[in-house]
Image (tube, rainbow, N blue to C red; front, side, top):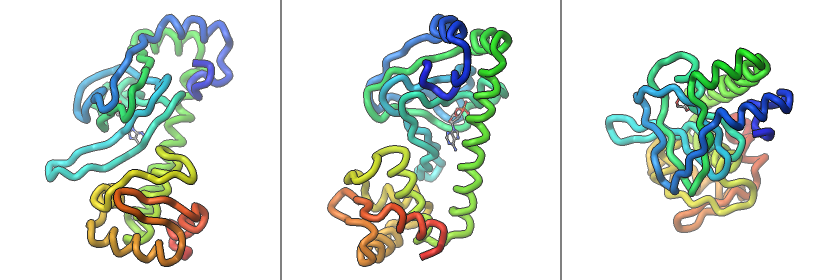
Length: 218
Ligand code: CMP
């Protein structure tokens, strides 16, 4: 708990109380934690493992919002505004999650308002990212959008210098374009030595170069 941004700068005594307030839950890989539209008013912290935040649309397409790792928080939106879940959450690997229910949340926040400030900071950061994403998805061409999806996967899910397990179809969904377009864009990015492409994987060779593509600078 001490490592999560939610408890940054909070006195040790608050951490003691918080430890009691959270419920620990084990989830196997690929388990849905909740679905977009569900009612629910608990906030989660990833203790170990990884959680994928996404939405599925009626036509079967999926949009990926984020991959969250240890220390990261999700589910805070419904906790705060009592509206249905804005997205679905699922584990990608065996994971341990800490769950905080609304009553427990409020009694912590009343005693230590820093926690509320930290949560606001987390939301501000997420809004910045969402603004950037909106900009890239609405103004950039397919090339920039594919570069954006690859960069996001590298930063959030796989890390640097890793073969990212990924089909052209998946990448098409993530970047809001067609499979044919992804194939064409990947071919060009490979020619420019920004990525390496194999069967079922993409490896980023030049992360900085790819970020330039994302912003339409290259
Ligand atoms: P909530 O709406 O309660 O349930 C779904 C959760 O997904 C939401 O709270 C946020 O914690 C998280 N979430 C929604 N949109 C994004 C996003 N764009 N980036 C990261 N996390 C998100």
